[in-house]
Length: 258
Length: 359
Image 1 (spheres, rainbow over the protein chains, first blue to last red):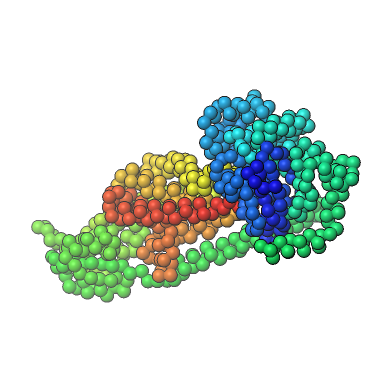
Image 2 (cartoon, rainbow over the protein chains, first blue to last red):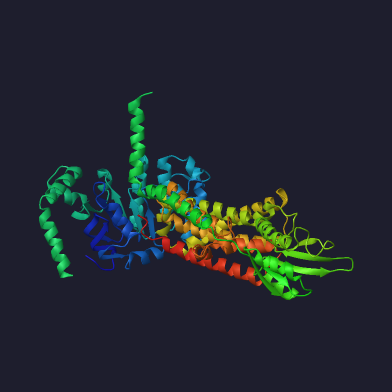
């Protein structure tokens, strides 16, 4: 499973926010060049895990390796692109100014050409001079993606990237993700939209900070014996919820073994 | 008017308050803090002692000296004329009483420090009282020698505004810069851009220094506007060099920006950031010499003044603008170094306050 081809290697990762245990021993391996989808309901720990991979929070337990090193170190190399759930942009600045700012932080040399490329990718080249505050939510989401793509990252972290994006553009996004993956870019994407999940190479069904089931969309459907991925997700969630006591006993054993 | 709807709004506002413990804490705690400060500042009733140095040559008539000694609020000592003036310059004395023997007449000369008009009035009043007592109601030293009042700094033509202008210059630059930097860095946190920045190779120190430079630029323009308007708009009289005034003001701005960044780590909303004004800005206004000179603070409050950056900024600005000190003067150098130290300390605090975990 592990080895040099793993872009993200998470073993029994734990994170707690006060009384809330957001990650309860999450184990995930994302291989290089793979599109790995984190699928789960709101509050299941998807965003927490992505933020841990982005080096924004330190897990309390378990190990997390990103591009062969610690998460924070990996971020320091500038090879990770991160798109947050809400478009985090400076609304007073123009699209071009926002991109230029992030380009400078990421140490990009051929700034003008790169900005043009990423804006073409998100189909907003004509809004380059627009002030971000005047753009619609979907457009801001696209600019946000553009900033994450600027430095041609090896690992792309996308936290619900297509929220507020219309279906046609959503398809274009995914075609682009696929093209990136074919060039060897690893993509870790969270979603609760099933048709998006079906486009991932591998899926992790997450609930209550744990991976319930892992595999390709087809494998998960076959395993659950359902007609589609949505039903498979529900069926697998329910069957995992039932032997919950068993699950916590297992993690207790893991604690002792450490 | 629907009572139920009004009640619903009122209930909602109250619930929001109840959830916001920090706001409640500040709402109730801040007035207590501020009132306690005011109480300690003005309520102590500490007798203000005026230190008078009598110059030994030419000798001041003994009855005059005795009368001065009899005034309770005066603390009288003697020194050579040069030593007495030096004490006045060093701030160790409030007034010097000396005799000036001229061809036509002999007069008593009272030299006052003069940089603080309020203080000047008190000091002069006490001395006049003593001298009048000694001469039985007639001007001291015999009918031919009237009391002559001179000033080391400034003079009777100085207004209260001239005296307060250096304090306003420091205070406003600090206040507005602090508020602006606290609120805008908070926006960086709340809009998620900080999280985005921390997921790039950008280091926290780079972020803080960048903020200092970016904000510093506008804060310096603001400082120039404040100084310019004070001097040319309000026609405040000043000594010293404006360049020195600007250098001191620049240090104030750096400290204010980094305190603002630091404080923003402890606020979740812009409202909470504004609530830090009574905690950060007001104590400095009360204790740094803005309302009461630092050397007149009680022993309980003086240690607080020592740890406040505005104390040093105000001291330096007054020394330059009222007394005409140059930037090379040891006092100004010391104040600038202390301010630089505060700047380093608060910047380090700001850097430390940006945790990776911005949840």
